[in-house]
Image 1 (spheres, rainbow, N blue to C red):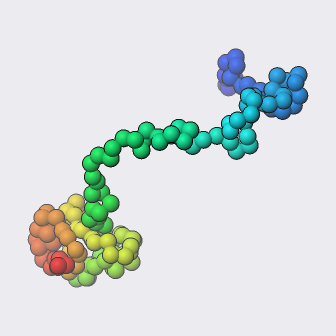
Image 2 (cartoon, one colour):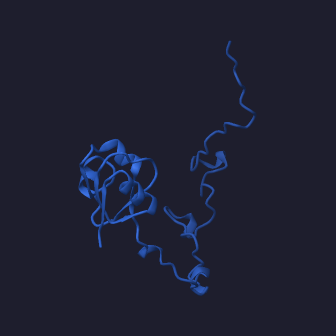
Amino acid sequence: MSFEIPMPAGANRAKKCLGRGRGTGLGKQSGKGNKGQKARAGGGVRPGFEGGQTPLYRRLPMRGFSNEPHRLRYEVVNLEDIEARFENGETVNRFSLAERGLLRLSGSTPVKLLGRGELKKKLTIEVDAASKSAALAVEKAGGVLKLAE
């Protein structure tokens, strides 16, 4: 059993036909008024433009400082990902991690090992940084953790 849901009145309006004669009510200047920048093709001003007056965002003083662009960002890898993709006795470094799809080899972005999951394999892991829980888990599994200086 299917139902036809009726559209509410005025839901589908006819498209405005601009510049099709005076009888349409949108002839001559096609709803753009009389001359001026906004009446021209491609006309109008950008957001924040105040007619040549110095705009508000430039009149207000700059405040504060953000160090966000210079922040040190790490590519993170968890123990559970290493456990699933590496065999016992292997060496884990940025190249082997990228080879197995665990991180993008994006130049010099440092790699950090995080402790989510369990590690039962004896691995040699060479990364730039590691959390305390990850370092303990690698030592507990009998592996070696080498951190870059």
